[in-house]
Image 1 (cartoon, helix red, strand yellow):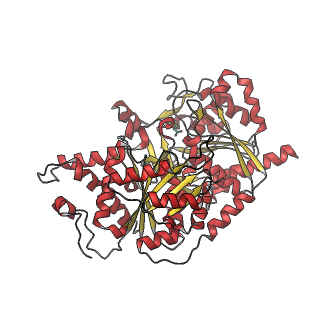
Image 2 (spheres, protein in one colour; image 1 turned 180 degrees about the vertical axis):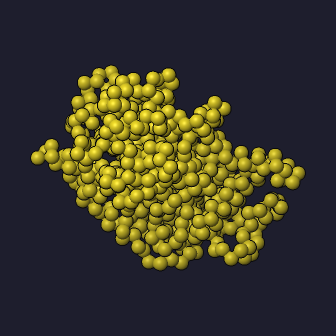
Image 3 (tube, helix red, strand yellow; image 1 turned 60 degrees about the vertical axis):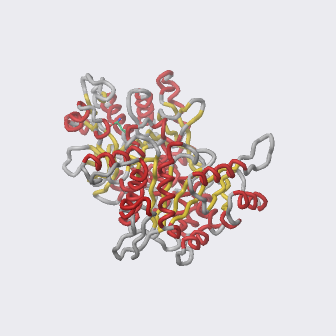
Length: 572
Ligand code: GLN
């Protein structure tokens, strides 16, 4: 393959990003950038583009670039940034990585995620190791070159025909300029291999009642000022784009009309790939990238979306958590993978999920309120940290146990189940987690010695059990029935564990640990036998990270089945 350099002024460094000399196929790169405002659905657009290209027989991978200094998403408060999505290899990333995995059926790794902090960190580490051989290491070009190197490496590792790279934030922000510089450099180097899609937003202001294109024109121009011309504009709006506005955007943003894709609001994110294809997006992308591909095979997806829409009978689930509020607004983004996993399993059970957020602190102010949980077909408590709302969650778990309401706990939701059981059934009245009460008489949930050492060093970034571990599933349990397998791999993100010293007492009191680490030391799933409760099960790991529309997670399916049964029983 021919060697190309970015341009002469970049000289020697440019060769480091030149095309590989090996036989490996040459990847194409689609950058997704956002205009006008955040939250317009870049992640879903990136995931959907990936999906429609996969349906044309292409190998696709996806990367997310986040412009903050945090080296990964692990140290951020969920209300700041939404869910932390944990990859198979334990890397703590942005929730968009979850969308990519769910839509495209991929298992991504740390090479698919970067932040400004992680990029700077490796450049500085390399400089300290004398890897730049005495050069003056500068923000430009070395930072963008590091970015480009990482993108190419990820594409190569995945043997991708197309790598989709989403740049977080909005065009015009100071923060993502160096990433745009990387795009510009790649485009100069190989214009035919790089495509930029601008996901923009067209407001329809209430008083005016007309869809406005001006903010998109400005976004396009701002992108131009970074030296980049968008190849495609994905026009997000409440309504579909009409021809007049398509023409206007085309004229003012220097594109042909067929490069403007309408992306109206939809009921379900899973509609987006199908909507994109209404504007023939995969064909447009293939043409622009000079790729040949097979005929479209989106049928499996189309069928799954159709069957999700056919699910009209409701199933009502209460999600009891604490990270819901942001100012005067509700932020369910924090539990996005849990929500999606509930949806996948509900659709597969032929039901429409109706999810209600309950702030567990409300049960602390007034514990009688917990009886409202009777109105639900099931209760789920997702992961969490710290002491706020903990007693309210324990009250909710107790209510579910005593009233035989299906309960599914995840991570903290399992630790609190174990505490509830220890306190009210096993006779260990003041049982607690040392996360909340370091001096508890019964530290039922405690930190492992190896993690304790890291915490003592204030090494919070590396003090959790992260990523996929194997769990062995005991025969004749709910978990085994659900999985149909005797060992599974599931992803973790926690510091604390069920204290091995109390496992015997808890078992004696009737709690079943149906999943454990292969050496039997760590408790991974707790449940009550079916004869005692219809569904009372919780996992130390996060099953939600591995659920998708086409492959709902077995434990979520089992929970939903129990919820549907509960509803039928109550309603007769
Ligand atoms: N706070 C608990 C721990 O660190 C649970 C974490 C979680 O729910 N993800 O172990």
